[in-house]
Image 1 (tube, rainbow, N blue to C red):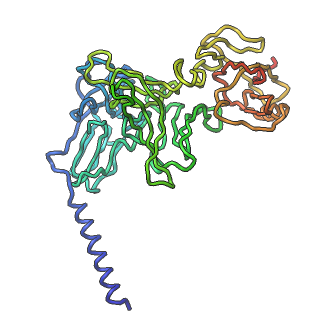
Image 2: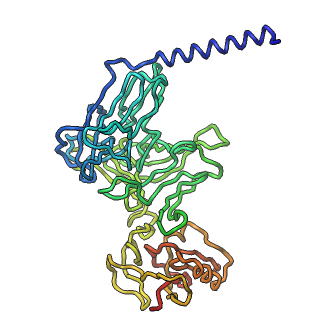
Image 3: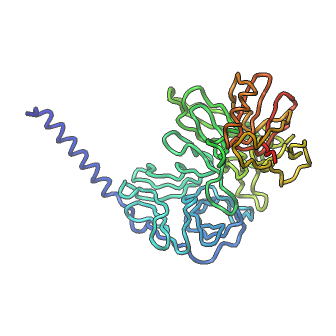
Amino acid sequence: MASPHWLYAISLLLLLSFQLFSTISEAVVPASDTFSYVNEGVFGDYIVEYDANYRFLPPFSNPFQLCFYNTTPNAYTLALRMGTVRSEALMRWVWEANRGNPVRENATLTFGTDGNLVLADADGRIAWQTNTANKGVVGFQLLPTGNMVLHDGKGNFIWQSFDSPTDTLLIGQSLRAGGVSKLVSRASAESNTDGPYSLVMEPNMLALYYKSPNSPRPMLYWSLYVDRVSVLNLTLTSDTATAEGFLYYFEFLYFTTNSQAASDVDLTYAHTRYNNTLSYLRVGMDGNLRFYTYNPNVQVYAWDVAYEFMGRDSLESECQLPERCGKFGLCENSQCVACPTPNGLSGWSTDCEAKKVTSCKASDFSYYKLEGVNHFMIRYTRGDGGTKQSDCESKCTKDCKCMGYFYHTADSRCWIAYDLKTLTKVRNSTHLAYIKTPKN
């Protein structure tokens, strides 16, 4: 038989649980703050990113506005636009609700008294929602930071768009363990689906990967060391580096598993014409990582590319970009300079491509050698060490999907390549490439 003390504790717990449930269930959005917007009517007049058609919605907080936009007929994305009509500069899409799952004409965005924000197609199919029904939401806001939030009666965020980035991070936005821990590039200007590039927050570094249909796993082509222990989150911040305000820097504040204090890692200093409070970091469709800074008070030239991580004025060359020189090209000093062939190097062309090997039989193909070249994956991966060249070749020969292998004779390191793409010219002639080619 339970003691009176236990009975009292259980009764108190049940009472508190009931009161909490009652408080949440009674928290409703006032009818005057609900809305339902329909995707219909005329398109906006100004030029926006990806040359899209768009319809703006009432939620606005300078310079951010909620819109429906499309780059292919009758396939719309709900997105936040950064930029104002008054500036007449290209407006950019910095957050998207339903990438890869478009809606059509007459789709609706509804915020009801239950506190759920729902994007439904014209036939009623739910394309996206915040899943916040009956969770204490009493209001909706679009903040001046570009964060779209649903909050409770105390102002706490029950849901925020900052928790679900696509290819872009705004200042104050995070990647975090247990949530969205990567940015994924857009496929193309026309196709709003996931592209092959991703920026991933890993336990102790930031990493850029290229995902190829030929490779069993994404290929690392850039990384930035963060910490020796597991990182819980990375929040993009900015600040002025000088009292005069002409030099700014971007950094990530981060927390780790063994510390309650925030640390920081500098990403870059950026000379820019503008205060960089209104900035974002994006994984581009070409796989490059760039900072963009915006000034809403400028009429025409409202945007600066504050920094790109792989470029002619950067620490890393554009040659590190997997598709900088197309399907198979040689890159030097950020320029595409040649097409490798079995007969040597030929002039650069956008049509550069290795001859396809269609047979898995070793007797049906051979290898040709290139000296003084690296594959884009080599700079940030160690490959297989202590490997004889004959063993490296044998590994590639036995793998039908292997298109060639790369070998460093000085330290006997081997890399197997399932995709060739961009090769980089290097001074070290002991960095070798062996490319598969059909015999006939």
